[in-house]
Length: 229
Image (cartoon, rainbow, N blue to C red; front, side, top):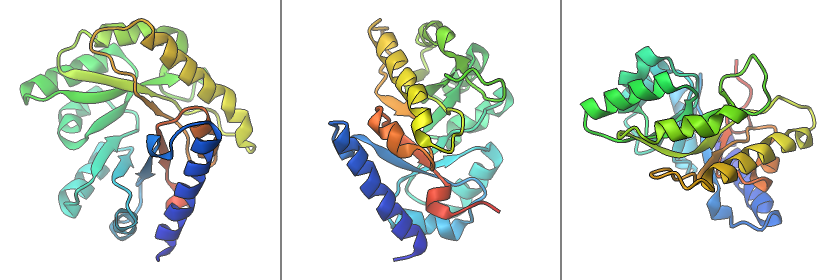
């Protein structure tokens, strides 16, 4: 088995252990390989090891990989998305994790309608309040969900967040818990057409804690592929 494949095996084992610790089925958590700046050969190793979701931060980098690699996997947009890239994003990605403003949602809805599709999205929430991070403030998220829910060509499937980086991943736990509680609060509103099944949270340093707090998608780059150049 390649180094990438071995890393994935270990990560899957730790995801399963974390899920069981929190009384969840391991199958409830999906592993995304974050492929920003990763070469095609190593991406193919991850696919060979069974990973079927690739996360990309930039539309242009994703476009090249998707068109040249031609592999049967799902591609998710996890980076900040500019409205002028919406027309490309809705054709390239199976899910967009980074919806943080109504204007972007409206542009994606318009572009999706033009090609006759419904685009699956997550609402990005800035639970930490850090100015350096994208995402809508937690207190404004319910209102944004209600507004986007009225758009015919977008389907809201959950929430995404990125907590501050900590040397001790336990320090990230309150942020993951806050996103889960926010999800539950919005779900209690029973907004028509909104299905908040997904919590996209947890990265290489803290995914075990994220799974314990309810993550359904963990976004792993370095722990799979090694440090970026």
